[in-house]
Image (cartoon, rainbow, N blue to C red; front, side, top):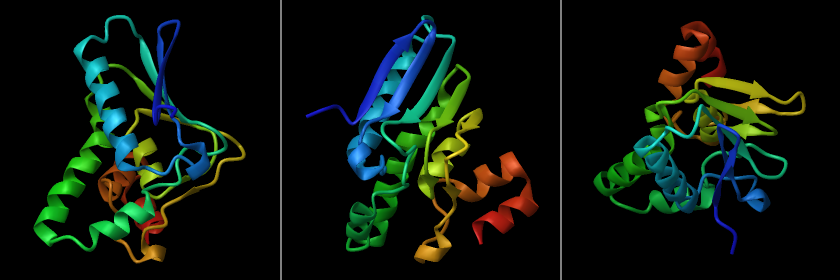
Length: 165
């Protein structure tokens, strides 16, 4: 079975690829854990890199949270769910700890938490074919993955309100 996240060194660039194209790189627990390990290793010794580029395999950057896994979360106790979700979000948002510039290369759809993940990067470069969307409210979910903070910090409060509601 192929790794859920790939790390490739291209010159001085660390290219990180979410590698679940059959699921449009939906953010599973497996992807979260592998991504967190890669970021930890880059934080330990960033000396051989000058930048990080994050992208998705196949035709999507990320379709957002793995809805099947998120549905299962609703069956847990609120306190346990809160702890698990905090850890899950942290595995992706640890990208903010990287001591290198981080570029989200959005090659296709970036939706919900997938777009929040891209917003956590320093710079976003978006393909002309990519579709972007904060779809939380339409799914009956609160804007998670730091959406309210990240969107406002990148686009300003007025734009964030419009995009998130």
